Length: 482
Image 1 (spheres, rainbow, N blue to C red):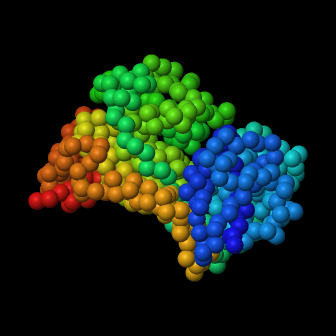
Image 2: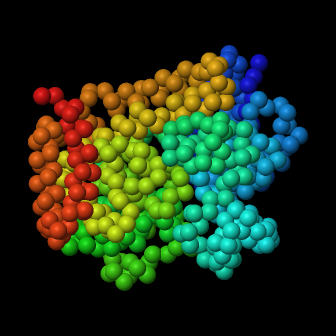
């Protein structure tokens, strides 16, 4: 006997982070059993798309979404991967016809709904939809969109209520998203399933830089993922310009594709950074790990948030790279030991600069953050656990199991990282004791602050940075013997 699941998702070569997410999850689910029944997953994609992932093609039946209506009665459950891009338009439409379990990668679906209505010639429908939900302010926001403007205020109008109300159940990746969904529908069946990512092998930094042609002596700052106006690049460029006054041998890499609606090159030219900032464009999956391994620190800043959990962030952390994030949305759920958090607001640029200065001077702190980040992902974001959580939600109260070789492989990956306590794969230096670490930290904070002109009068900045960095160092120090 079989348990059959219909699985709606984009697949590569459709450029969506959800394509990668689904492919990794599906391969982990292959061969699973649910209540003693073998699991069969059929994947439904837009007609005309041709998947490129050979593992997926070989292990699953891939069908055009248009076939689902005649086959729908065959399935025990239907899963819809829902994101905020045009790649999910047909998925949205099928959900409206056939309710199922929705995996909400983002709470804000406004950009998807704009594309669906305007691409379908339904301008009046879009204005009406916004006015019905949000009154005169919604109508005015819709009219600005029709003039070609996409203001940050669109994040205040998520347009995801139809999806939530149509769902038989909802899967989210953070407690933050759970709260947002329950505001719309308090009693919807819901599971928080931490996003799973593969734990990559560690690549030596000198090897990565040699492959990419990057000077081994540079302090390398990177931002990875699709570049859009919400990734705080403008703020980062100003902070990076100030960083160069103290750390002139620095380079800022923007790794990934660019939104057609956003081009920061004019600001780069105005700041005189043309020789210090580089765009890579789209990077192949084969080269991407090398850009991470080459980095001294990665930035994963974003505001406003659509409620998303960032797969690129988890890949950065899993690769053992120090990372700075915006203190907003689901990112606040990360442990302070594993990620530096930058507050949004008037002090954002100053905080970012101080973090970068400190990390440029403290390779031991970078090593500590690297270890904590990789360990956090190994323990909390495995593909094995994500797959089991999916099955437990789809078939509650029934015994579920993955294919034995996959479960064992995931356990070994996690054990590789956590074995040996504080001895890190990413650095041999240790932080001697908690008190020593604290004294070193506070001295370094004071030194860096003085260098960039921050004094005791800047109480808020000093308090934020000291508290945040203490959170990074001290929990790690507690694990040190003696």
